[in-house]
Length: 621
Image 1 (cartoon, helix red, strand yellow):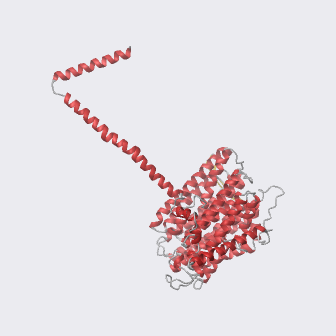
Image 2 (cartoon, one colour):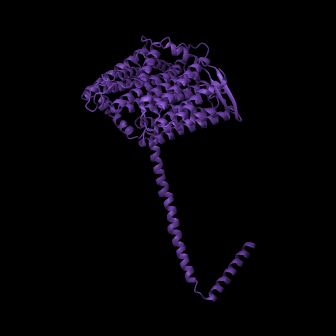
Image 3 (cartoon, one colour):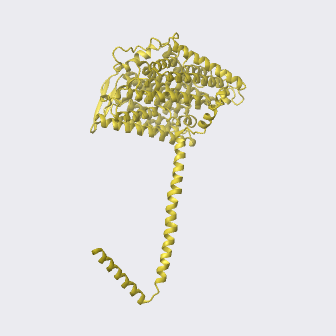
């Protein structure tokens, strides 16, 4: 392949976006056919480029080190393959789910433009093109959310502002790194995180974890789960942005900066990861809407990736990267399952659903596999990547991080027991009449993703050896072992034993809550919800007290009120009251002085001239 081939993963989906947007609304079959063909072509490119692995394209652009540089190597080709695979599955799913949407042409345009921008960001080997592609995703993010309807506009603005702030931090970090290294070519940069470089690391880290949806930059995701199309949730937050954000975070810690085990920056990452795991999963546990529950898990699982990479230990880093692709698989499958349920029943409220496994067996099967995978149940892929992260966290010498990850495992499984019990395996409710299984384009992507969850778990050596292990080659010190497959499926070690115990605790927690909740599965989490102290924290969280965006709005309103009352009103009072009344009073005095007698005016003039002369004389002396 020639270097120019690297342009095709960007240009092909961009061209498909334009074509899908221009096709008239009544030509649905043509639009869906072109969208499917384009997604298949992009997927073929993904496989073809993965087989090449090393390719560079460099084009002089603006001078001063600002060039259009693309680079394909093992890590970027792996992410590119993942992005193209998810694009195909989402496009296939959308041919049914979105076909009657009045903005379907705009939807496909945003989807393929997002794919083009994401591919460009992955391939970029110069910070300026990277920022261009990265920032472009802000526009498609906004557009895709607004397709949900008028109520989604506020969520779209919220997502745009939060993501925009994180992107600004990333740009600031890039500028600092440029001033330190003197180059914008990414592959030429490798610095110690010392002095000003620490600031650059933190700023770029915020950009990466913000794109991935980690706390505290996550609050738009649960809102989008309700307001935006479910295909959007499976496409951007669950797959594309997780892959991009964690890809950049891995590049930051492996290539741009030399992150060391036990360093302060390593601890910062692990703290963010652990906090994201625990707090987000606690919020997921109490949700009573299927999509909102999944959205908080999309946030919580990012914590595992950040924690693994933050350990700066080979098995932990590999676990974090492996969990990235695993999460994209099962979270995409879970959101597509929720969309399948919504497509047939018209609702995702847990209390209105139940017993759908008999009517929708394929959706129920796909959901079950993906739910067990995200919960870390042996022998699925989630078990493998989580075990690697647990091992990495313990090897840091700070067991508190492993404990936080295990707590997350307990409540993750409890959440999905609640969701599965409520939607598929509980008794039928009167709100939903008998339904049929969703059409093939809806359930096939779910089953493919479920199959991949099984394959990447049972045959974990395939992804670990071919995808993950080569990423760390060259980043491991001499003598360190990077064979991650030895304990991947082993149940006979203390770490796996604790993980299995966590699953048993979650099982007991669910059925205890189910019995106390009058055998209503959607109430199974209420004992935890109403626990002393935790209840008050939950109340504050549900009131959005911990939502930085909402509190920022409150602060700005209070600040504007202070400015209005403390500055604007006093200024108006000074000019409208004091100045005008003083002027009126002075005018009244002058009016009385003007008697109309010539002699009085002459006396005033002579007096003024004498005063001026006296002043000049005083100044001269």
